[in-house]
Image (cartoon, rainbow, N blue to C red; front, side, top):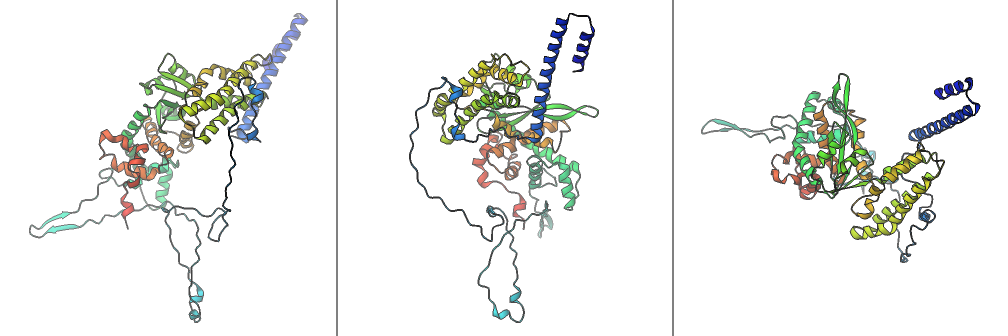
Length: 525
């Protein structure tokens, strides 16, 4: 703005032709208006990030009346009405709140939750009139209570025997531990890992909790326990990674992390590259670079569909690779138009069309379609919407008032540049419409960054990737991570190396979950 004002004053004060001066001033004014509009759009976007709604889900007042016919035009022919039937049913009355309920919904807990019974005495049963009362029933009320983080010291009392004829002494050996000579029981190792990487409780906070519980340990001891435990799990991670590479469809993304010392007082910027396989398994690979070279190394030998966002490194990787089909995420495309919706009402038309694509996906999930039936449904209902969307993009590009710096123009350019990749999912039923499933899984890294902040060394960053790969996969398969770790930390050293894949959460759930190994803590009295 200051440069523009200076230029205008210089033109006015000069002896230039008045027509040239007026034209230059008009050009400067238009440039200022464009700059003001761009800054206003940025300000509106920042206000929304701070105070507005964060969800990307579109709110439609009447979703059953979502009409795409005006936008589709002749792109899609009306589908035949589906057959309907009248259904009658009996609905159970809402449960009435009882006196035993803690909240309106009632206290809910499973059979594994311990219950401690507190017997309350009746004053009427004591004293001279006690004979006039008798107990005929008990009324039960429950409250949910919490103990501070508790720790237990397991004391093994091992008998020492003397052989009378030989007068020799012998003792019962101590039970084997995960690490020979270590003071940590397997329950402590699993607890440290779950608290740090599932619930994002840094080791220095766990160290404080131990101190409050009366246990004195150095923080370096806890760090050593965590490192050795994760290193023990590395073969399981490797087996899971090999199985992921056998998938026909992979989803890949990247997220930053500070790891390792770059120079005095500064950590280097590195990246995790989470890769999601088609059987709900995920591995967090790590690299000091955000370039396509890491993708080349990690996906060596992979043949299939790679689903990603529009980051250029994925384009460079997939280029000139006939064995790789590149698919791109519709959610990232939607975000471009969402940002443009504050400044241009026309962006709402694009969002309505994209919402139609997601509505088709919801119908597919409701109908539980798969394979060819899913492909046919997408071809009948989603393909016309996608064609209408790109026809709308082409039509908008003809607008004279749409400059390249406009957010809507950038959104349209992004969509058109990736049109072929965005349409891949329409011809492959196993390919998702977006990478939202991967983004939900990788949230553990940003959550960790807000708590343990960074990784002090590159080895530590690789360890975080190993343990988060297993724990996140546990969540995806609804496996409780604590008993899983208690079992595999004891089992991995004894399990045949050729069958280590059986210890990945996906297979462990079927093989060992029903009869998993326990800690000695479970048998202590």
